[in-house]
Image 1: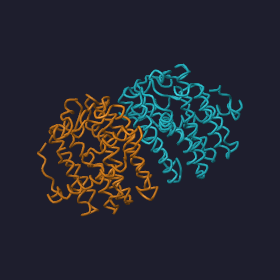
Image 2: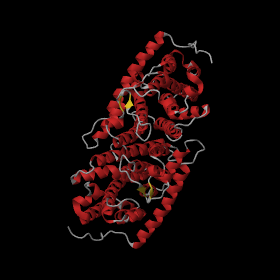
Image 3: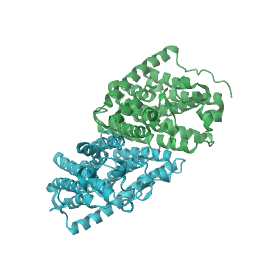
Image 4: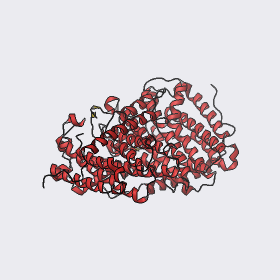
Length: 310
Length: 310
């Protein structure tokens, strides 16, 4: 295994700076969109809304929301419109984190450096907040403000359900729970992560393309781009778990090794895992070729997912 | 408070027998539709599918599914098509039961006389099965087989999200959890139940009308019919909890009084609660007038919800 080198196509510093500015602006837009979509109520169920807001408005990279908005911008969709799709996928992501953190699941007290939702509130509230966030994420996609054409909204909902249900994210989480303490071969680890985290990242890129009414070829390319960066993202996560501190991560570090589960790092070593992530990033970037300069942020993002420290 | 009498409009024996036959046939159709929509897989996530099937295929009255199919039949929708909407709402209902039964929620070991899903499997699997059932219930509505017209599918999804999310079923469950051991005034109990169980029953009737592309007036009547029988259903539930045995219910009886929560029975007495349920059933039946004989099963159903013993 040779030392991984900086890939020839890696972005210049100016591209990385532009990406940071773009991600920061879009994270703010997705955040304010979520804020507007989850108004507090005067009813006795207000604690539920507070927990939904706590779980979704606590910051984070907003990678999924960013992907949706940035891909949609390739097709001229205004960010005020695509930010709704970004808010929807971030709500679904947040629901999955709230449920994953529960004592019966990963039993995590910390999320983004703050108490996880069931620690801040209680278990019942966390279960219900996750449930209601899932509902809300589908509702947003169905609303006319997301797109004037009902068939576009339907396409978004079908792709979303496929990515997040038993054949996607939740299926992956089930495999992960079942595999605790067992070792898996590499192909199984790939499939686990493709489902557990990859599908929703792929969907985020795909959703931008659907919203932008991209051609079938463009949709296939952006879906493939999303698939590859989703896979690279998870490998980078495994590397971070093995190398970063809890302070950097904002969550418990070194959990994978402690739990004995198979990861890309346990199967390929740190350098091998990094090389695999870089290979996937190159594949992702190659799908962006037809979009030229317009896709420079998406190109920089592909490198970012494997260079981040949290 | 006077002894409640059999209402003048109560169905004849022949109507009740026709209803039983119709409910039984449609329960079978909804059951086989769910079965076909949740195929087992060969992947490691198969335990998740097994839990989803366990939670949804365990029988039950299929009141919600029946309502959707029977209302749709008023408008000539074939039951093979409307059974998909029935399966969707039954899956959502099942997810809510799986999560409500969890130790952090109502902590119930028994459901329909069988171990609840987290007792049969484990807590993590039950949480995930509920999550994936919710996703599936939305996915089914979005699929072209549900209706050729995307805007009809969108209308179903919006009504479904409204009924089942934070402003509906889950909001009601939150109020219920917060109210444990507290006494509520009657208006609050009404609102709690309108959200927790009423919304989804109302939606079931409404969904049949949407699928049947009913006129706005017809939709409003069937929505009102659903609202009233939803409220009557819950009052009957409170009465059953106070009067039926665990064997009859297939779940723990007498839980309301033990928990000290306000119910229609604690606030109105058994006879007062029964009278209120009958008043609501009369209101529900009055909405069916324009549909004449075609609605005889729906009329009989309104009486059934307050006469059932489980």
